[in-house]
Image (cartoon, rainbow, N blue to C red; front, side):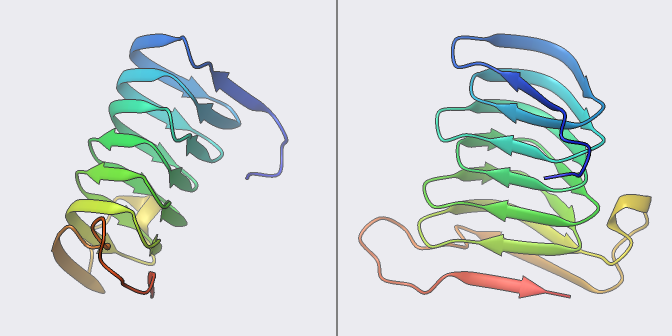
Amino acid sequence: MAENGEVTIVGTGARLEGNVVSAGNLRIDGQVKGQINADGDVVLSPQSQVEADIRSQNVSVAGRFKGNILVKGKAHLARGGRIDGNITSKTLVVKEGGIFHGQSNMDAGAGSGSPSTQASQQSAGAAAKEGEEKKPDQVKV
């Protein structure tokens, strides 16, 4: 998480549509549809359902996410999480049991919005599906 310590929480029963802006970190336990901009980190809990574009320092997805992610640092897909969309980050970590459908662009200048010159990979279900044995994937640039 970012150093400023401020955390905005979208609770389990909350449903938001529109632009969500946080000066610090953001944790989403409920539903969000729209645009998410955070100066800190964004954490999507296992019960979250998000359809949005996210711009932040880092992101961790343990729930269901549909949209595009642009982070300056690490994008983390936890066990049981699902991402349907594109990710631009410096580092991408996909844990066993996470599901990723989309394109990953890992770029040292991810936060600047510059096109990826380092790596681009197309993925359809990058992590293990239920019942399959597979080691966690971790890719660093």
